[in-house]
Length: 619
Image (cartoon, rainbow, N blue to C red; front, side, top):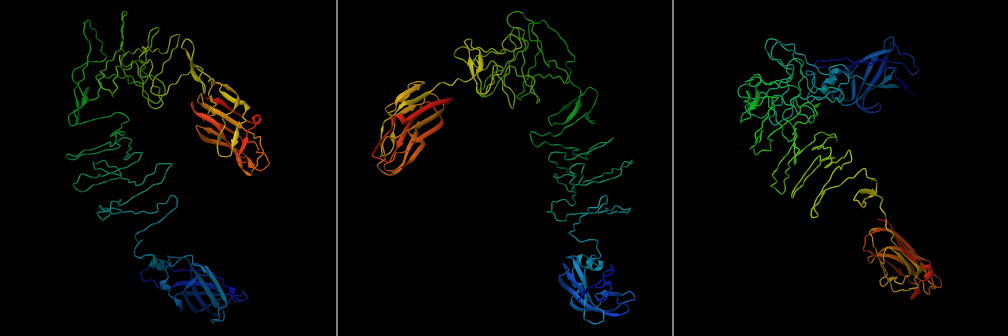
């Protein structure tokens, strides 16, 4: 019976020279089958190296003879014995896990009765280096490594040379390779993450130190020394306490900084704070002026008005006039209150006339296009808040805003988004809006939905006028539309196919005479939702076995709903079929009822058991 081999330790000698021997040291304590130490004795040993698992394939096996010391310890070199199979030199220590199996014969022979298996947890360095890469190099390319140790730099190169040599150099030598020679990526999402960082010490002797330096070689104009790309954030970002966050220097005819917006919704340059332009003729009181090529310089402004300005004139002529002859859409005059707390009008006109009509501000526009909007006075409110008015007029007893036209619009409003095209409000006894037009014109024209509030509005109501023309929202009154047969029908129904019932008697009808007794059709008088019902009985026993009797609702000559009796059985009655339907019908549609029966050649309807009704539920 085999016993386990007690292993004291595995000791591997790390040989780092290029010509390392293909062997490593191994020690074990030997006990016999009675678990007693085998001391000062010759023992036979068989060593097997297994791949992947304790029961894996044998990749190398050898035998050795060894002598134990007084403590039962043997010391051997694996790889120095008599080879049974495999080659220790051919083992790829980097490709898998390996296990060592030791078998011993305490009597010194080859009758191995004691065995043990354990994993090789460390690989002899020289052997691993041989299988994974040259011992003369730190690593081989391509190289990929991973480190999870906190507060430790996984890869660091320190250059202590005083000459102008880099600590590290990376180069893509193929001219078609456009990927970065070196790339850094930071996946941080909750704090400031940096992909590539460079640190340099600033100098005070005029030399330029740079944390990150980019250089573009070649004489062509495409490319950038430093290039930043961002989807929604900053392409290039600079931060400084007392210096310049971003600086560009131009040598020769170059441009120190160039910014370009490639879409109508983007900006070439956005600034927060004051702007300073030096070296372009700056001086106190000058204005920034550009020439035909867009070159800007500070220039002394031409003589003009000095603000604040106040003047008066009694001449019978226009006192102040600006004529704009430009074909571009530029204003002839522009006035703006910059301070957000200033609620006074940017432009105000006052007319103190007490005779005829006095106008504070008047705008004239020449309407000479059929598809372009010309406006005498236009007002616009910007910003997302739903307060303010594009044009605002106020009067105590007169008219706040007055518009007059011959063939256009006296007052017109338009809206985009969730805005309101026109808003009218009265705070006293006056009218919020009065629109007057002759009979051939329209007082109000709306191209879109209208909204009337504070006049009893609610779901499903309709706008209703009283005798004075005052409009309010009122509940819809559904007209009473009804027809039914109280006397039923005794019509004979044959078995040849569809029979239209046109002999209903004792009709009760409300809402107009809409029933055609010749065709049996009821003409719908009002569009709405209707309840339609019919029920019939037969007077005669069936003489034949046959199919079911069918009662049909027909609309405009087409069957839309059916009700069935039982099958025809000789000497038995049909059961009574009935049919119901609720459906929206349009005024002018025609409703009728038809019957199929297959029990007799002819079977009469029973008047007391036959009826129909049609009722308007709601519009």
